[in-house]
Length: 409
Image (cartoon, rainbow, N blue to C red; front, side, top):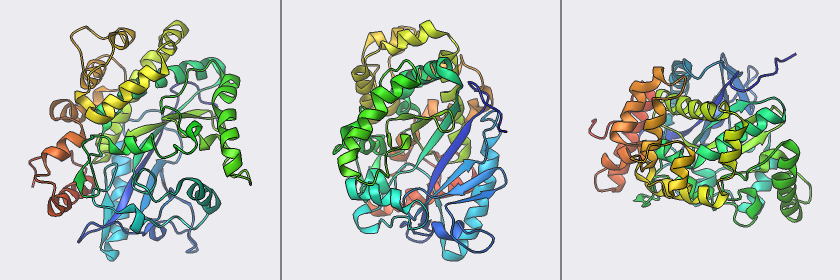
C-alpha cells in the first residue's frame, strides 16, 4: 500500500523539453524514438531509474518527471541532468537534441504540429476537435509542473489557498517565452498569454487562470468541476473529457492522487534553474500553508479578478511588473519599499525553508533577470539568424547544465 502523503511530505516535478534539429533548430517529431519499451513497442511512458519519460500531446515534446514523489526538490537537478545527457545521446544519430525554454522562437505550429498518435490519442483528438491544438499555446509550449500532496479537507484548503495567492507572481520568477513566430512578442511570458486564451470557446476550462477560492473538496466540485463539465458536455458527447484533468486553471486539484498541480511555471534553461525555481515556489507555498487557517482565509479574500490582473502584469513584464495594489503587498507581509514581482521573490528567498541549496542559481535570476529578460538581452536584432544562435546557446546550457548568460558565446 502506498504511504499517504501529507502536506510537504513529497514533491513531484515534471519538465517538458522540445526535440529539435541540431543544424537548423527546427522542431523534430521524434518522441517515439525515446518512448519504446523492451520489446520495441511505442509507449506513453518509459521509466529510466528515478525519472520517467513521457509524451504530452505532440510528437516533438518529451516530458521528464519524477518516478515517485521525492522528500525534497534538492538533489533532483543532477538526476534530471543525467537523463538529459542520455536522451541527447539517443537523439544524436538523428542529428537532433533537446531544447529548453517555454516556446520555440521560430516554430510555425499551424504547419509543423504533429499530434501524438499512440495511447491517449482519443483525449488529444477530443481536445483538438474543440480547440484546434495546432496553436502556440497547445503545440508550442513547454512548462514545469510541480505536484504537492495533501490529505483531507483541511490540508487541501490550506494548500489550495496558498498556491492561489502566489500564483500571479510566478511569471516574475520563471518567465522564459519572449519570442514567437520569429519576433519579439512584447511579452516576457507569451506562453502564459496563450494559456489564458486557448480555451476561450469554453471559458470555464481555464477561468481566469487564478483559481477561485474554495472551502473543501465538495466546494471545488460544485464551484469549478461541475460547471466545467456542463460547458464541455455539448462539445464532448462521448464524455471523454469529463475528468478533473480537463480543468486548465493555473493550479488544479488531482483528487485521483491527492495532489495540487501548479502549471504556470515556464521551463528554464537547465535542471538546476528549474529545481531552484521549484524550491523557492514550494518554500513560499509552505510558509503560507503552515501559517494557519486564518492566514489562508485572509488570502482567500483577495478577489480573483485582482489576482488575475496581477498575473497579467507579470506575464507582460515578469520581474519588473509592479505590485498593482497596496492590499496585495500587505496581504503578503511585504515591506512598503518592495514594489515589483522581482522584489516579491527576492524577499521570500531569504525567509522560507528549502531554498539555501539553490541561492547561487537563484542569484542569477535576481541579479540579471528572468530567463526571458536574459534571452532578450542576448538576442541582438531578433533576426532568424539571431534566434537560431539563441537556440544553439540554450541547447548548450541544457546539455551542460549551465545558467544562460546573455554575453556567453
